[in-house]
Image (cartoon, rainbow, N blue to C red; front, side, top):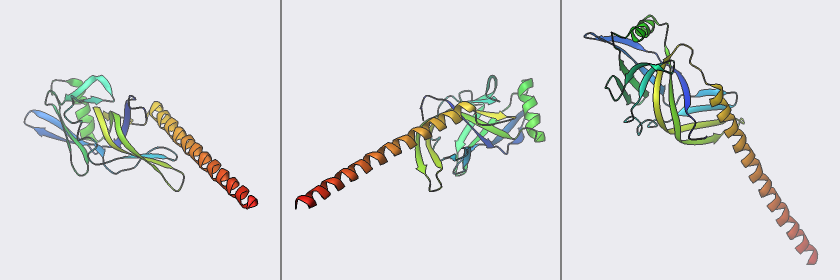
Length: 200
């Protein structure tokens, strides 16, 4: 995977709302560890525990539908708090009660109209697993996180799917090339052995 491609991934958030004095909060998991995300038929991913540990000190934003003009919170400002636990990446967004867009989202989450999220990141490290059924699974072990978003219709973007498809095709082509090279070597050694037997 091209490490410079910014990725988006989606999970059912199970957001909850709470009131802390005059400040409303939205809390929930923005990513869940060891849970398979199907990218496309035959391709899936999961996120390993600890994948976010090196990136949580970054300046990360909480957005609405990945819209950079609709900022709900920010780690640098202390209005977005992100932590890892045994389940995944948990976040708490302190909503500005004077921000109409933020309060609209808060009420939609409270009613259950919005209950999913995505996170935007770059892949730093991952592991690839070719499974017996012919599918490929990637385990993402480290990311560079930029933003988390509450989303109305979260989904994989076509560019992310295409990037994984290109990676799959390259891996399969590399595997086929290695297999052909091995077979040529075996045939060559077999021919040499046959010739030696004839001379004997």
